[in-house]
Every structure is written in structure tokens, then in C-alpha cells.
Image 1 (cartoon, rainbow over the protein chains, first blue to last red):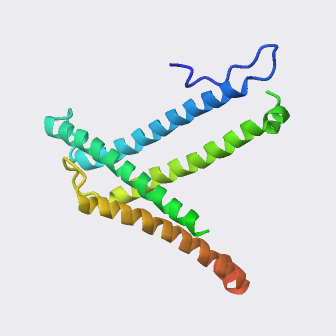
Image 2 (image 1 turned 45 degrees about the horizontal axis):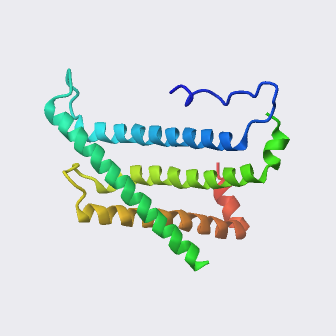
Length: 95
Length: 91
């Protein structure tokens, strides 16, 4: 999957790259960046909630907490996304 | 890549605008989720109860209200230029 991290391949002698290909590659890279952002914030929040005193390993209760936290974070993300979307629709309807 | 050819392509131009807008939306969702999580989440449970869900919805609305309030007030203080430059140049 190292196409995610590589730059756009430079066209050899043909010059300009196909627009459609560019758009698809950009969409993929954007999706990857969003997933990374989500994971980074989720890790931060769930670590703070679940790991009180860092031990020599993650015990069962910590793992269970992290698993639940992940699901709740996704629920929260979806709730926020929906709420923000409705707000935007409402704002547009006013104009 | 020939920059002039890229920006002259209307299809690519529109694509860039649409994707940029989508990204601004995504970024704000990330940001508000983080902020509202601090506000609304105590201990993560087996599901998102309705009280917590309401908290998130309110949080989003108030966050946007706050953002608009700040922009409006800043605009007002810039119009009455004297008071604005006083607050800005006080070292």
C-alpha cells in the first residue's frame, strides 16, 4: 500500500497526467489523512480516559475500557457530524 | 507538472473546490468531537445514552454560535476603529 505515501508519479515524456487519475489519488490520500486524524485523537482521548496509572502492560479492564471508548468516540464523531450537517443545512435555508 | 494547464482545467478546479470544502467540514467535525468529548463524556459506557447525545448536539450548536459571535463582534469593533486599535496596541 505504498501508493498512499508516494508522490504522484511524474509523467515520463507524455507530460500532463490524466485528470481523472489525479482526482482519484487525491481522494484516497484525503481519506487516509482523515482516518489518521481520527485515530490520533481517539487514541489520545481513550488513553486519558482508560489508563489511569500506566502499568507494565494493558490489563483486561484497561483493554475493555479502550474498546468501549473507541465505539463511543465513533458514536460521538457521527453525532457531531450529523449535528453540524443539520446546522449547515439550516444556515443555507436562511440565506 | 505544467501548473498553468492544471489550473486552467475547469473540472480539476471544481474538484479542488469541492474537496476543499469537504475537508473544512471534516476538520471541524474532528475539532468539535474533541472539544465536546471533554465537555460531555464522563466514563465511556456500553452505549451513548440520550443525555450525552443531547449534550453533543448542543455543544456543536453552541460552538458554531460562539464562532459566529466572535466574528460579528470583531467586525463591530473594527468598525468603531478607535476602541479596536486601543485593545490591540496596548503593550
